[in-house]
Length: 310
Image 1 (cartoon, rainbow, N blue to C red):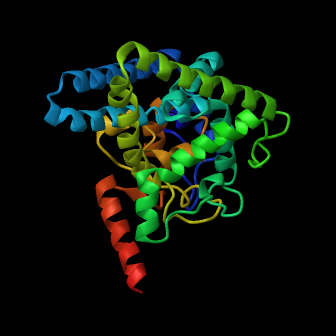
Image 2 (tube, rainbow, N blue to C red):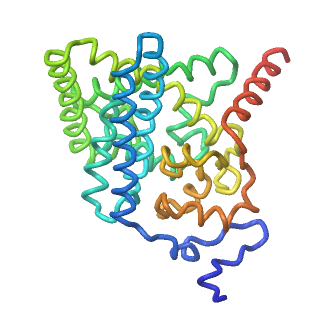
């Protein structure tokens, strides 16, 4: 087998250089369209389930719808790297639309996320570490419930409408006008769509199919995101500062293969549908490979409780 077919040879204590992994940089409009269509189908199906459920199953159905809606974070994230599709325009359009239900903005998040990649786990510069991971059980619950998340999104809206994003160091002054315009258009469109839906279908529909699912689904996304870097090294070593989670195929499908997160951080140019191949190359070198989200959080809560007693 040729070296190209076999993949790069790993050196002790090191990951392959980016140029050695470029054979996995195969972006595809078709792959992105299929995954986006599946995700859209799940949104429609979960919404239909809310509509037909008897009263005693409405909340569970809303939780399911919320999980699917919250998972729109995955295409938002992937498109920020222009790896969901081969077309840059398709990445921008799909990503911008995917951001709206959770009050996010694609242009703002792209700047935030690229800064996170540049300064991963650097306490002074990684924007994902502001605020830092919860240090006790009360802070953990507060984070998971989602209060800081919603406050942060509404704050971005408010600052966008004021036209002042200077509080966000990762927004370059040259990019700020475009980000401000995007925030204004996105937030206005979100409010208008919600009002129109309320007037046409009734405000209970807005609650059942959007507000309720978002409030119920975001905590599960908070749980998911906490596993990506919490407890990993605070340095620039991509093999140790990020965690990959080996999880069920439906989770990988819904999250656009993001559970292979260490692989993504090491090689952000690799599209979602090739991350499994990257994992095959790297799996024996990764310091943090979890075997399940529930198990990780059970252990993490136990550690937080022990720290409190100590």
